[in-house]
Image (cartoon, rainbow, N blue to C red):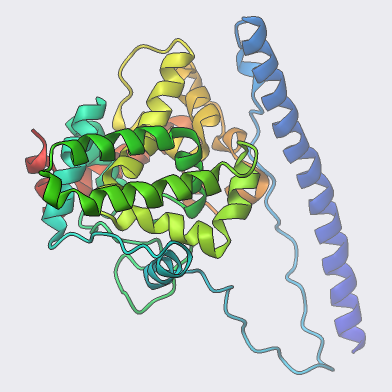
Length: 350
């Protein structure tokens, strides 16, 4: 026990010292980000020193010792993450809604390709991001953590070709639900009267879901709270629907393109640049995309994450400057687009 107490004291000193340094570092990341945003509002040009140029501190002290007077604690499983079966049950329970599932994944790919192309996404953008996000072979119902085994554990609610979180689904309906309604209404108008009832019923359901999504202020944290409810999971089930899912998956990427254009960036975004906005959020991703090329090899990726998000992203840690992260993303896309699923999606584009 005496050795344990010495080891624990040594660990605590090292950990406290690391925590103090880390707190200062991540506070400086947040402060620099606020300063950059303020400069942009004023129309002032950014400088390289508007970014933190040091890498985040890494704990290198001794591990926390185990108390020998206590039994070893059994490993604990991470919290349960809802899966596709839960989304479907929630949709049925909350809205009496069952998505129209495709007969084959190819059917969904054709619907997604038509929707993406009509929205202005290029084949290169859509296919390469699908390849990166959905492994190059993912089906319309692919979920994070279950890419290679349906018997594993989901790690998030990220779903589909572009891996939308349940929060994304709620937010897209709140902000762009009118587009979904208009598309469904246009489809219904082209169907003979006798066959129109199914789509009209779906329109009624989607409007109820939109009302739910708009029941809180338009704020990510508010939408995240809704997404964690049974009704929020029901909304997420729309991604599986052949009529609505392609619009939701497309809208996630389109929102980033619109954001860049609204900020005055007219150049076409490469798939890797668009993925930076998808990965870190539109504001942070736009920051990376628009910085001078010569800065990208000097600016740590930590500048574009919260501390927890960075800690949970080994790719951003390994590729710890902007140029390396973009290059690694491009390299992954180059590999994954060679897979059959990506080739099938490319062939589906008009």
